[in-house]
Picture (cartoon, rainbow, N blue to C red):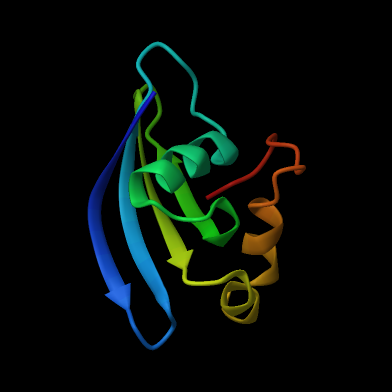
Length: 101
């Protein structure tokens, strides 16, 4: 699995970076959000708890996933801004089955 940052924009007002990324997963299924968050954390030099993946989309039959993530300066800011369902989807103990977007 290889993760690449396509674009990164700083949102000063919301104290976050808005990241568009791609994941190449040749011969494998779509990776979990946790796996992608770990790769993004190392690429962006960010705290794992401050990264919130908002969307991951894989075209049928493709081995490439495109996604969007927000990387906050601190966890408290993220909890004030991110919707509850996004926070829930990004918890490490959440089971990865049956989720959309």
